[in-house]
Image 1 (cartoon, rainbow, N blue to C red):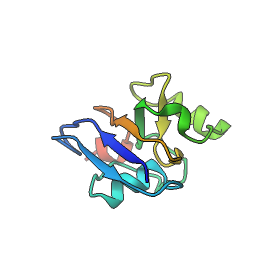
Image 2 (cartoon, rainbow, N blue to C red):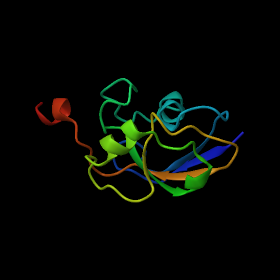
Image 3 (tube, helix red, strand yellow):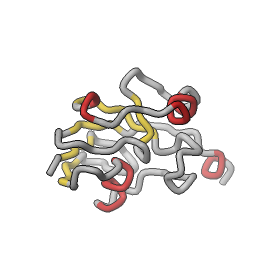
Image 4 (cartoon, rainbow, N blue to C red):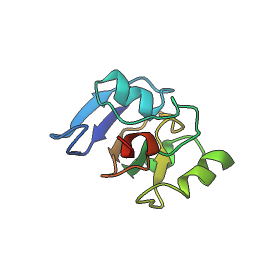
Length: 112
């Protein structure tokens, strides 16, 4: 099973960690299943950018992006060439290193 190394994030994973999850799992599901409560305002339906991650290692092993994900990512804060929506990025057999950006665009959270 692939291992996801999550780089430290002050809110979601202050120390950083590694989780082992089955291939075929979305990165978002993998993080949530391991108590890393990444935002996912649209409930993982590929309708927002709150679960945006940056894949630091293993990007090429993920499934290809569809046009909807590409269009949404254009609106993500801190977009990089190896950005993905974690709800759409499906693990293969290769280990990954991911970074959760410091900010996300979440109108519901920002208005509180």
